[in-house]
Length: 451
Image (cartoon, rainbow, N blue to C red; front, side, top):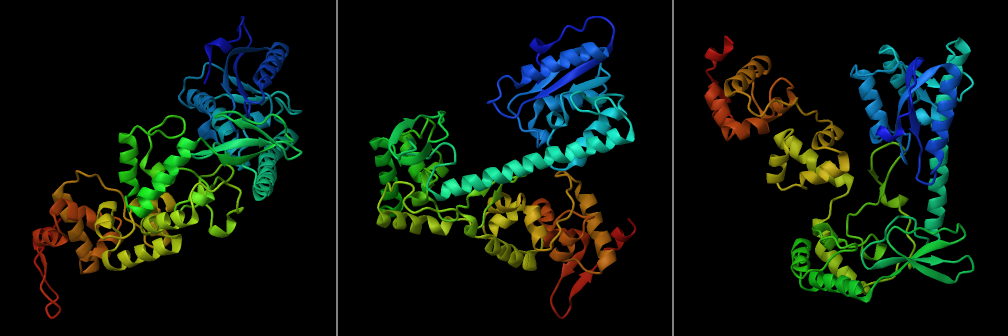
């Protein structure tokens, strides 16, 4: 965010401008200062009056949503609150390494529409507007995006190789595990505490057993779950009553009771290691993409105890994607597109499983070719809802759950059930009654046809 401490003496006269600064990681402590000094020198030479600086510290330039100062700057420009005519940026990469170069140009275009220019003063084109300058700017945007993509691919390959060698690459370890440094000659080093990192690139880290009291908690957890058939929620409640705390002193959560650490020996059934594409949302990796190294993590419980725990947890595990879609397809064939409450009542996998796997229940239905209807207000008048059903009957000459859910001009069938109790009751108020197969229906909705 912009910081009053970063205000630069504006002096008198000159073109009002602001500076935008960004550094990617905390390992570049002098980067912002270097950028600010270069901006000050450029402003003095070219007649700009720098009012203040917007600085994103230790933030990737790939995504705009994670850069608060960048968003604040755009908000000031687009909100009509800009008291400046230019934004001084060191180079194209400081403005952003967006994976779509058009995104960088889009933000620049929005600023230009408000009379604010983006000036990359360290680039050869700087303030140029000639055709060759525009071409070079587009090329630089593509190069900035490619740098991040290429660097991300190299890091991913290196991390995969080191993980395959049994080195720990994944941040804080789980409960009852600790990170130990290993020297280049294979001798063990110190135990790393929370927040500590190795300083020698020739060293690597491996997982070792943590304190004996934490190992005892893990073994008791498996005993309670596998031998005594207690649910993870009941185990978590028991541990909380006894004052047992997770690593770092946090309260033991229900998920933590089921899976106290992310290691192969204690992974719960259905757990899918995530991956984070560059600038994208979290995705679950398929099983064939997992990197597993037998013996890389110490066994905290016996194989027998582990298998007993898995037998208890397996029925509650999230099914694989094909199974989730098959269950949803069976629901859609009978009930059409349903809401979260209806889905839960039908006894299929919980709607949260679809949220996690697909992003939302609507996207899960879209994956099987069902397009949910539009969103309607929860307090929609009943008369208006019935009018929608009457118009649907005029078009389709019938009323069914599938027809209602497929029509974007009326609320979902689940919406009608919540408001009227059942679809039959809504149909009855409309004058539509199903009697049987021989006499398919009796319709008396003349009073609605005039609407």
